[in-house]
Image 1 (cartoon, rainbow, N blue to C red):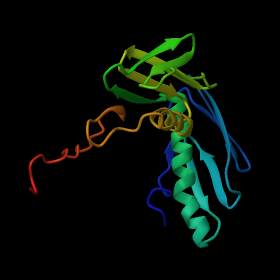
Image 2: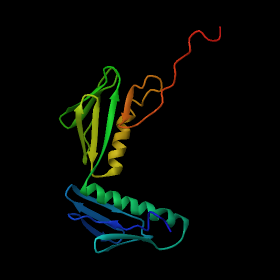
Image 3: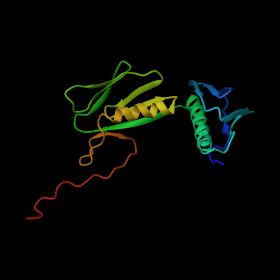
Length: 181
């Protein structure tokens, strides 16, 4: 039995869950999310808890059990609280700003990098070196943050680039001068 899968998902007040076969719709104060799951996983709503059960003991179904429960938990959390990822931009002349709803960044290229706004994603720039990506769909928020980070992955020697907030990477030492002669 999956340790994650056997835990019920508690539905907070203000959140409505509708289950239609293997399709789950979660409505909350921040929005609505709908997702269709594998029909081999049984999803039921009992009072204010969502119970996820598997219909067989096949290896693939066992793997889907905990995953399905975690995805439903993320849906409930997303529509009630939302998700956000904070990115820190490090480097001389590297900065970010909002142009309307789009995010424009100067990252040392000959041109500014413009990220178009995506439905369900909000960009915030509290300072020139900080970008906050937020929304209700955890998968979409983290994927957009990863796509932004891909423009300038942190450099191993100087630390320049786009970092996740709280991320720590040891910097490599540079060349040792005067050794080996």
